Image (cartoon, rainbow, N blue to C red; front, side):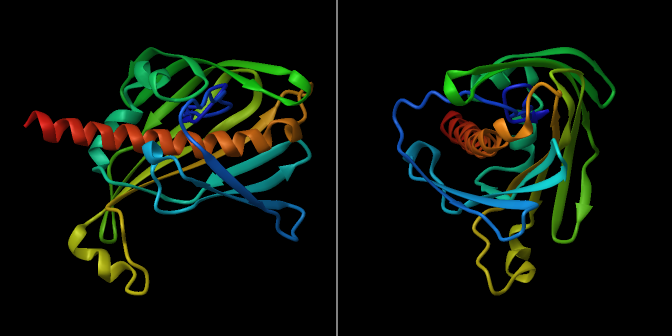
Length: 242
């Protein structure tokens, strides 16, 4: 689903994405826990065009020998839930701003289910390239009321493609401005809307998950930043056209 990207990232997209960075400098740091089953990766971007005032954390959970659950922390976005939602569900345009997502095509839309065809490319070690393609079903969940705000999810699952398992969820949450201090009085709430991503991934037998999990983490993080940039760009354009 979106998720980010190469195969499908939807961002399922994200899956494996190939990033061409022409005008930015990014600094990454990696922190490994003592628990063999998990890894915490933190990346701070210092690219003004993808400005971030917070770290995005990525956690990897080992599900079995060749399967992982990769999840992100909540990323703040200076845009409304509606703006982010419209961006994520404009499936034919995802490849315009998701790095490495070469093709994103809406095949059919029935009720809350969107079926997508996506193609992406990822550079691996030793000069290898991994091209991934697949059919992904995205399920647009109804708006849900939560304490102090609202949330809407997109659940996705690859039904045919280059992975044994590729399924997860995008979650967009919007907090009522007047309730921000009530939610957490000890931590300043900088953003009204947050976006998070989780995916369970298991490559086909011929591709060890160890070859792609590190790159997936980086690309999921990059995809989140690109989505934020695109959402805030949309808000900026709306303001200047009013």
